Length: 301
Image 1: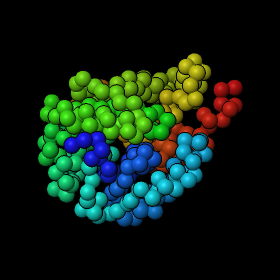
Image 2: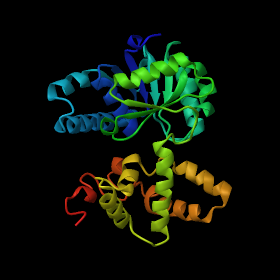
Image 3: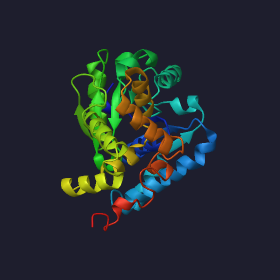
């Protein structure tokens, strides 16, 4: 298999990350199938695609004409067999639940062509925990993106002990073809590089809030001013999604008895998760969206 053999990409998971990965692939000439499990979300997904496309055009990433051609390369379907037809690379971006991911991979292994490379956009899970369920472990690895994809332009690439070098190399080349900088890990690591660093930062920031030391806005103002950045830690948490990694935090709390982690878990659950305030994708997290407070020029005054 050669890089030019990859022509059609299947996106499994039509949420924030799946849509962004699909758009990034389509911008660079790939045909994209997006599988939407729930037919009731068809209009929601297309509305998201249109909004993100308009944003990219407004920021001069691509022209309106290029966007119109890009949209013609995106196809959505509720039929898994239809979604899997003639695809060369699968990108999975569903919730961080091992059993659910295994179920999805088992299902699409039966439907996708034998040559299809399977990738996971998992933020924290190791591909070795999922490899067997794909039915093609030698063709399976992690290809992870950060949000917003068109801005961060980095792709974490991480195989497992059974990943064949041929498909690791092809995935690296594919990431370059869609305008990303591949960051290839030498061994499996939960959270890759950036996420491994950010998880620690995120927990420390939440600890400061839970312990009454500072508010999210105070922390973000301090971070943005000191680091000369346009977004703070809680703004980043909102962009990632407060639900991302929440179940793993819950598992850790149940097993460890860590009182500080439990306090953070309860704070997030009570104030955000149970209320459906999951960040920018739901319109509210630590900030309200669109037009979050930290984007206001007066935020740091």
